[in-house]
Image (cartoon, rainbow, N blue to C red; front, side, top):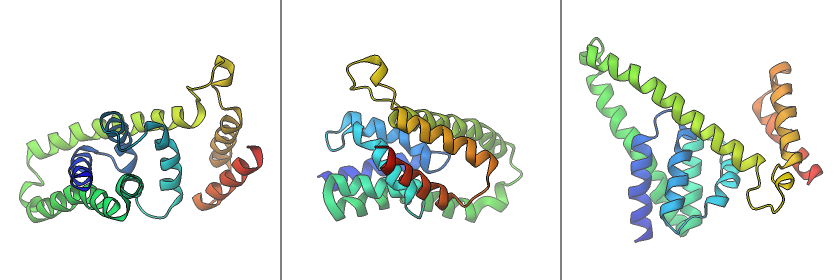
Length: 182
């Protein structure tokens, strides 16, 4: 039952997470809130792993979630569920795009999808920021801010604006800083 549930839930996530892999985050938090298979506190760590691995973040998150919930069969079900809507939609669009390229309704739909994608990505950004830099379980309010993580975030944010390095180098540097600071 868990494997079918994962496939169906990730199919729905794949169908509605417009804007790429990070847009799956709000749906993943919702999944964690409604299903006991996943603890919401694990999602920031899962995101860090998914972003560090090669490949699309969304599919990495789906596979990681599926694996945590139901092992290898769960990983396969969640990954296939997430990818299936995109594959189906791309096949349909590729077949019909020439006929509908100039259609005003299609152009209007894309106009509406752009802000939806921006909104989902912004929500994912805020969820990732809160999960990485804020410790809601801390007793005292001043302990809720994760200072080492905030330092890493600010340093990388400023450095990436000034120094153009390959993203893999920044990931390695951030991981090294995390080991040294915690």
